Image (cartoon, rainbow, N blue to C red; front, side, top):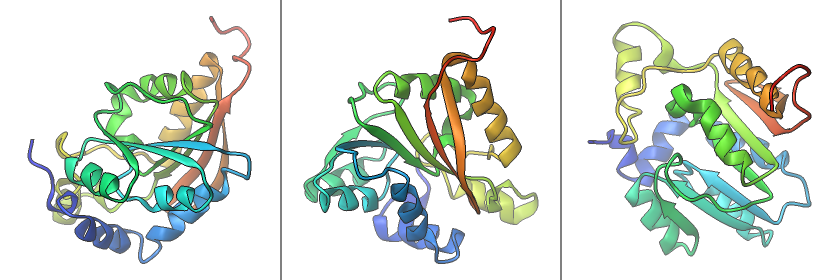
Amino acid sequence: MQRSLIYSHIALYRGAMNLLYAGGYRARFRRLVEVLGPDVTSVCEPCFGDTWIAEWCRTRDIRWTGIDLNPGFCRRARRLGFEAIESDLLESPLPRADAYVMAGSLYHFHERAPEVLLRIFAHTNRFVLSEPIRNLSAGSGPLGCLARRATNPGSGPAAFRYDEPRLLAMLEAQRAHGIGHRVVARDRDLLLEISRVAPAAGSRP
């Protein structure tokens, strides 16, 4: 399936993300990695797109593995010396890692988000998520339609976007599976630390 133009080259992707985040694109990554803390030795980043977190990990001798559908982004990551797996998150064998991180991509999997979480937590105990909750593409009219069409990574234009209540409701439902969460920060993105907890009382194993 044809991808949107912004996914054809890292410069276009970064430019579009900077516009969407009003110049705060890199700040989103900085806030995300601050949650990881000093004891992490390995990180897996599904739907990585950019290599900002990979580069941050390299400077700290943290092993980074990326997973992405985009062959161009994977080739670029490999040229830079990073381990990048070209595959769908729901189909790829996943590596064990101290932490998984994801920036702005969970909405692509919203119909199967609980499955995504269960797959990730089969290979880690921590998942740091930065997910947009205020989106231009959620708007009505021509501008919203254009934004949705511009964010097709190869799986089709994504009409769905999370807002805070829907995202938190989905996560709250996962307590029955022993997956809890805490909100770290609210801005254009909701920054969350998701981790294993005792299953909710009365839930089935």
